[in-house]
Amino acid sequence: MNRNFTTRQDYKEALLSMLEPLKKYYSPGRALVQVGYTGAPYGEKTAGLEGFSRILWGLVPLWMAGEKSCLDEFIPEGIRSGTDPGHPEYWGEYHGCHQAYVEMAALGYALLAAPAHVWEPLSREERARFADWLRQINQNEVADNNWRFFRVLVNCGLRNVGEDYSQERLEEDLARLDEFYLGDGWYSDGPTAQRDYYIAFAMHFYSLIYVAFCEKEDPGRCQRYRERARTFAADYIYWFGAKGEALPYGRSLVYRFAQAGFWCALAFVNEEAFSWGVIRGIVSRHFRWWFSQPILDAEGKLTLGYAYPNLTMCEGYNSPNSPYWAFKSFLVLALAEDHPFWTEKEEELPRLDSCRLLPHAGMLIQRGEDGYVTALTYGQYADWEPSFIAEKYEKFAYSSYFGFQTARGYNQLHLTAPDNMLAFLRDGLYHVRRKCQKTVCREDAIESVWSPMEGVTVETQISPCGKGHTRKHRIHADRPCTAVEGGFPLPVHEPEEVRAQKCENQISISGTCGSSRIKLLEGQGKAGWLMCEPNVNVLHPRSGIPYFSYEIPQGITEICVYVEGIPANVCRDAAD
Image (cartoon, rainbow, N blue to C red; front, side, top):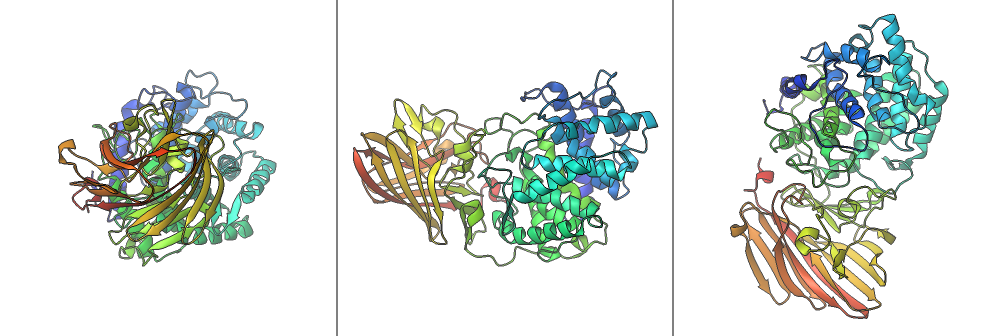
């Protein structure tokens, strides 16, 4: 695979090389694609549909450009089989909210953008069955979040090919999606507090697809979508490092380079939120960074994990086919060779603030001279409690270089691996921040009030400070307990390379990938460090963390620490 990502041809070759190994994983009727064996809550047939549909996020832009792939003949055959109730590969009939509605979105998108490849090859009877199968989404309820855009895409797709669709559902969903708009370019993904990549690669991505195909019918709404996207871009750019990596944060990280889908969708609708050179630079560096990571298996298929194959950090809803949502960012292939995205010279990131408040995300973003990004956070609570909610949303800091860690257990410290957390030990289990009772986000500090367990309440203030940050904790405990506070997780190639420097009020560990330091400024504690359980970090298979342990008496205890992580350019993840 050509991994330069400097020309449109590079992107095309990358997509085609990723499609080629999928051919042998299609079922005999071509309706199901199953590239692995791990499970998800939905059944194997729906997982097979997921594999079939998500590939379309990459195929459709290629088709829009008038180009072909090795899978072109498989798609209409698969639709015939999957929508025929008499065929053994029939995708199914649904009642209530179902994962299949997620996968219908790509098919609706295909009807909008490339009907010649998914509609015109079908006979009249086959078209009727396909439309009937899709219309199930109108007969049932979908999740009250970005899923409403799935129904929008399906109805717009049906309308585009002259089939019956539900104008009532279309208007209902578009109106409800507007209710999720928070202002300043930000949405919530439904009635929940989390603000993660779903705002970019779902809410904005789908709204811009709607703009591309529905602007004549709905100019007012489309203009609002454009304005919101431009405004969001001014904040979202802070989630990207100078080398192309995005901030690891939140759920669904297995979708990987879908993180750049927002920028690709901006280009698709000719929305120059930044100069074309800047937008192209963000996307190209992002692709280069991702394809310098071991995210593909020996056959060239996407794996489950983030920067390397890793089931530890996945959500339960991730099937082996789920990562192919990353193909959304191949939307740039729909752009002609003479589009300014391709013709303008790639530019570095514009001059950005060294510290930026993103109040809707509850973040203070620090950007060091090294170009890496650190987000100081007060914690976002997703009330439906997705996997690893504490680790993915509630840590004190997240880094585009050091990554973050997901616990393998809470009964031992190396399994809990509490980077950038304050973990309290009681009855043999560690308890961390999972939900805040109160939060405040200012330009100079982030404050939260939280309770890790009954009888303990913590008031925490996090403030940017030079290359690192300070954390002040005021702990109210109704009985004595123990707590451990971790710094940034240090990537480790060989455990023997780690060097620890410890004194009474400071612990620093260093190696070929940089250093991590935590210094006690106020309070009493004991310094230490540990090698964490392998594969807990989303970026690095091995990691160590420095920490302080505290003996917390009954009453009020005040602690203040300075925390700092310094990257090293020799690290694999820092490579140019």
